[in-house]
Image (cartoon, rainbow, N blue to C red; front, top):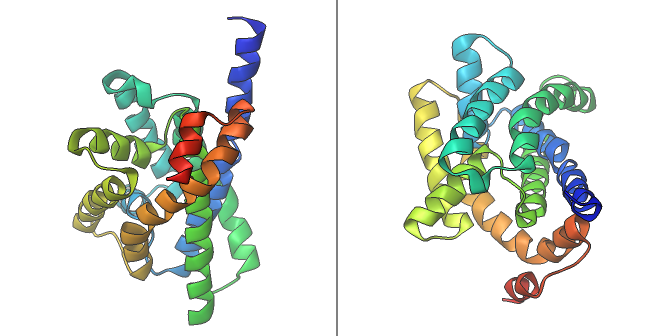
Length: 222
């Protein structure tokens, strides 16, 4: 591997990394609200409760398993971004949780719960819309979403809604708690990320590669 290629690869790695703690922080705000979380986290919370382990450990175990599975089944969706999310989001969840609890101690009021849902949605969707255009590997739900999209020939937003509906059903069967936040994630995340990617793609490509390709510029303009 040439020096230029090594520098290019390292730049993309460094570009992806900040999105992981931002996404984790958003999830922790959702958890703090107590009104349900996104279906992936709902599923992992159900696993956490069932096997009496931390949310971070449940996330690490489940997402790590998906990483290994798709490394063999659909490797083009697996790269450093997959590694960063699958093995980094769990520890970041455990690391960020005390921060959220320190900012919002005790049981939040209804107004604060609504604020937590809004902040959580903003952080998660921004993190996803930022890293996905880099095309440098994807986290668990996005691996499943993009794989489904290839099969049904639909975009990210619709595919994510379907994947979340499936994860919600599986978590519900395990007795996972859900609420308003879960519905926001199922029906809101996909469309929000779709719209944000139109705005953030040029920036994401510039951070990761130092340039904006003509193809991505056209996608954003459309």
